[in-house]
Length: 370
Image 1 (tube, rainbow, N blue to C red):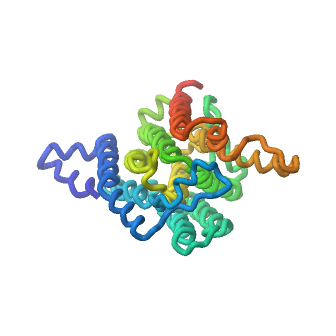
Image 2: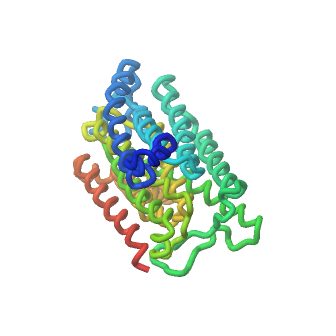
């Protein structure tokens, strides 16, 4: 919005030339997101307390978590507001930005319904799992349909780059001829959206853990979107040039700023939890970024902690059923395992953040280590 209002004035006032630079607008999107978080955070948290919209803690979880009973949840409203408003203010209106904002809002609504049913209507299970999956799958199908049916994506390929491998792309359309390549690719899009939204949701079990990892991931995606949207950098790094994706840098910066802003309230001991309102929305956004930037495989590295948390649950359930009650981990997801081994909650969170930072740096190094 500000770009369209202020950049035309550069012919009269040279200072407005700054608005043509993505780096400038991304930086101010992050600052704006932080300021919005700090402004609306206390107000939303107080309103949640007034309405007694508090977290229900599972009795089968770690006993140290029982003291969190009643902590305001649905704090994801803070993150979504602080991420979307700066994006609308500072980014240009491209289809890439529109899709990632839609991903955030779409799954944010699904998560909000789930939280509302659990903490307001007092339905213990909230939104039934099958309805969450309907929300995830429907957006995945919509995203896949837009990619293949709109003129803006006429040059969009079903291939994706392979980390650490130069000169080889993996065709997610299974090398089928047009239009049959649509089917496997759209199914993969659906899988990515479903997997990432659920992964962030599973990771959101300790104060600051998930939102800190989202901030780290958003920073990595900001760098990737910036170089992917510049023909000079993409040619130098030998990665696909994707015109228009540079504007996703503004969204990623806003998302990172919003995540850090929410961390102010979510750090141990948390004043508020994001709930499914935040976790499903943020996971969907990260998956959408990977798809739009043609870095689907790189998502496994950038979101390595999310992957590990999800795999710990899958392995635990599989092994439990296979062996008639035995366990691999003391408790799943993985962060609870380390809690029961004696790590304090802040120790688990900070150490997982450190791993997340290392994985983000490793993901960026793949552009040169090939």
